[in-house]
Length: 145
Picture (cartoon, rainbow, N blue to C red):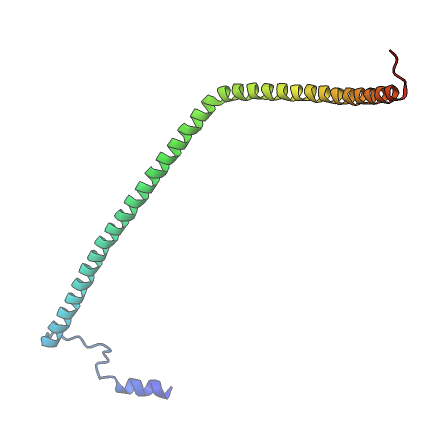
């Protein structure tokens, strides 16, 4: 409370907190000129940065646009290739079916040949045994003339 009383005691008699003077001197003019120059520098600098930002944004836009167009071309080429392959599927299917039939025929022929070779091996073994028996019998038996 004492502090508040001291502050009230220091007030001028007319009890104005703010004194406004209409007198303009050189200091006021220099301060105003400094503020105006600072504002101009800020506005011009901001405008220059805005132009650079617009240029950068346009560069990015051009880069993205070119990448998107390249991507569209790649996808378009890929789709055309897929469509071409799908169109060729009946021909490929026919060739694969023919190849499967040839392979099945080859397997059948190989199986038939294996069976025939097995039969010939058994017959050869039997013939060899018969020849061995005949040779033994002829060597034991006297020759007749």
